[in-house]
Length: 122
Image 1 (cartoon, rainbow, N blue to C red):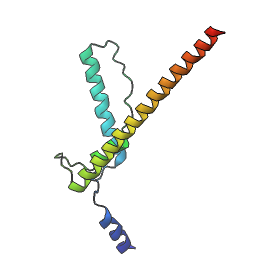
Image 2 (cartoon, one colour; image 1 turned 90 degrees about the vertical axis):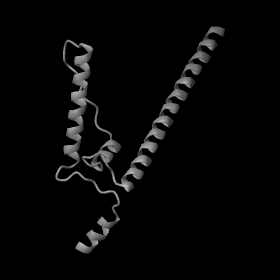
Image 3 (tube, rainbow, N blue to C red; image 1 turned 180 degrees about the horizontal axis):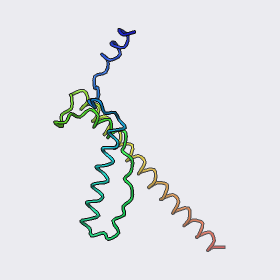
Image 4 (cartoon, rainbow, N blue to C red; image 1 turned 30 degrees about the horizontal axis):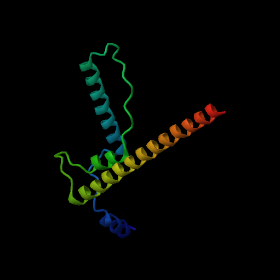
């Protein structure tokens, strides 16, 4: 059993460096940083009520990248390559989703315009 686990671990070219902390602790830490940043922005803008919306959840690719970043800010080469692929895929996905919604809105506007023109001719 131990040899099997060692063989599996050997294939992991980009291990995390979270030490005793786990992903839950990392997420709490990142959410606390987001909250602190929002509070600072609210204070700088002169917001009177001091009530801010809770921060959005941390994206998985951000957690993955942070889990493989050392305290010095360095990542091992394999993790850098994987992180670049993940980020480029994420950016491509966002671009595709944006284009889809733009096309959907465009089609919606023109279908509404066509229906108004039909009603006007009747």
